[in-house]
Length: 97
Image (cartoon, rainbow, N blue to C red; front, side, top):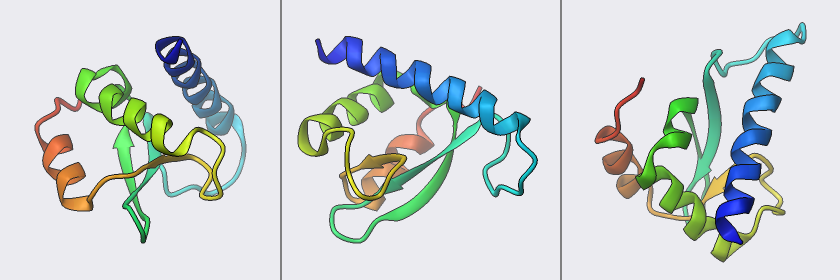
């Protein structure tokens, strides 16, 4: 059941990205990217390529965050509960395309 929710989330993020690209407002998130909030206590904002959503490591990270935080939390967007250093190290190993 978690995999279905993850697919639903990915589909929503992609459709949200298309919706935002058609709006006329300034954004610091480039086309083809999304913002995620990372950290256990203090949340730091990272902008990552949407292609990360297809990566098994990133999907595992999202799945663990869903189990811990759910998808309804005050930060909005995608919030990943892990150490910033671990997130940076993990995403550095992922292909960006």
